[in-house]
Length: 331
Image (tube, rainbow, N blue to C red; front, side, top):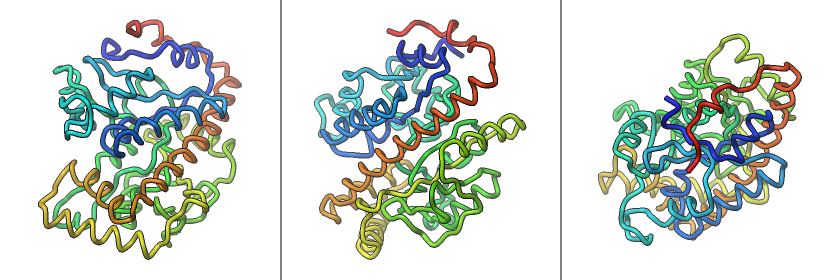
């Protein structure tokens, strides 16, 4: 399976030395934000992780390989190759989740990884901490459509912790939390007792667990995985107060965007990109600024957790990671 895996030398060196590494998804670049703010944000988030003393590992599928750690040209390539007329090249960058990963690799398609696919790829590279904006979840009206993000089942199977500002606010948050509970996924409030609602700090949904420091989160993750309890964890980190949006404004924008999506027959994997874009329009760009702020905040927290987890791994004196020497060379 490692024939498909190409780890950037900087990332490989950090992993071999058991230093802090933070995985990052790439759909936020290709499908989550308009150009050029998408590539600017990708670079800014990577720099945020570097400033915190960790190594960023943005993940995507390019040229038939899972690329763990991208060059600046790769980031530009993903950002400016959207297939919707907004970029330079009209060849589409596909949105890659678990079901799409083998197809993208076999057909050598350019693919941006979702939360689910990024978790899979991070686990292959043995990166335990991943930062994103918000996870997918149970969509509103799922009792009729059965539209539930693959992110949730991935969290139940794959040993990667996801630092996020909760689930995206366009979703049915109570049902999302119930689904995660059923699947045995810990949802840990980072400095909060309730689930953040992406654009806002509160949702009214109380969480069973709270942590206020990265070392405690790291110990929880180690205990979970050493017990053989497979699956990830959601580290729910609220958007900074200074960047949070007015609850009434964002609720109104979400309601209108959902109405427009229904009227336009938007379905499946196109729903989330459509809603995020429409909400940006309805809020005059305020939602985009909030999204950027919360992603950077999550990246900083993820770096601190990655540091704490790396220290625990060093203390246990585990053997070197054998897979890195077998991974095909980066090119």
